[in-house]
Image (cartoon, rainbow, N blue to C red; front, side, top):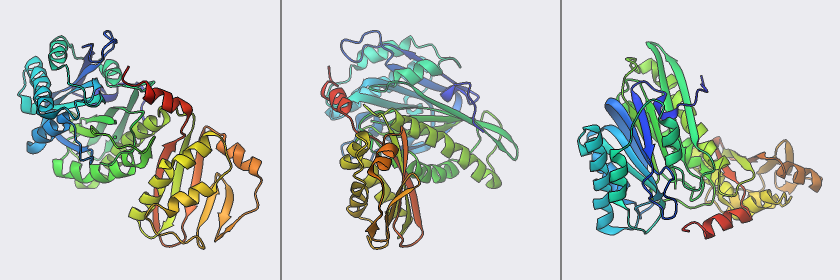
Length: 398
């Protein structure tokens, strides 16, 4: 069940967090921009990273630290992605990780490092390290941590849930950031999830990959995949409740719910977004093709601008599905907006254009594309594309 006390990454037992201002981004000296998330004991850890071939230095370092499958803390900064920064960028990421390790009395290999912000600018590692030394962590530090990871986000993303398993109740919490450069292929998206469940790493890894595909990999704001995308899950076992074979589904459902809520919070906060739309593809040749078609519709600039302007040009939806790479036979396809069928089995339906405009004018919109081929189903989410998106990204480095 969902809970609402708003503690995110410190909701699960044994986790604390804190944040500080390091002046990472010039001209914003008092903004929280460095965070620590800490467990009181070693954690089983799994992660999903960007598939962009231009991968940021902190992702490289964290991948290396994850080789033994265990972590105990995360250090993350906003304002600078530490991407496209060469060998110095990797040294800077290690400097930041070492500073966090010293602050917490841990080994550097126990620390995950993450960054988000402007690409191609050297990381002010010394300023970040100095700020880390003064961070105080507590169960109340979730709010500062959730704000310190923001860039163009207008609000923090904080989610938590608890789940009743056969041996007791466990907690899962998470925070995320993301508003632009969102079209994950694993999000600039960062998501950190903590749980006090005692779960085997092999089980956690097997659960996380499909969950990422159905949540973070099913959202799109602007069609751009970041160099820094990281979804990291830490499980410390502090609840004393083991995830047995018969608990995998209940635990997986709770983890999926946390990831889905964080993903939807990201797309709702998309840069310049005024609307969120859900695309349900049904009847595709298989699940992979259903995902491909759904994601192509959500990332289509023509669809996004039509929705923004409440333009009843629904043909853009089917056209986007048709170029997605999924098999599409227009003679078998049906397109429905809300509960209004606008195209069925190869022919447009006679509909009132004003009715379509009214549907597109809603803050949340559901679009269903039934390809009529087989049983492949998938859902994806997108946001509209506005002039405000252009303004935000034209001014981003200032």
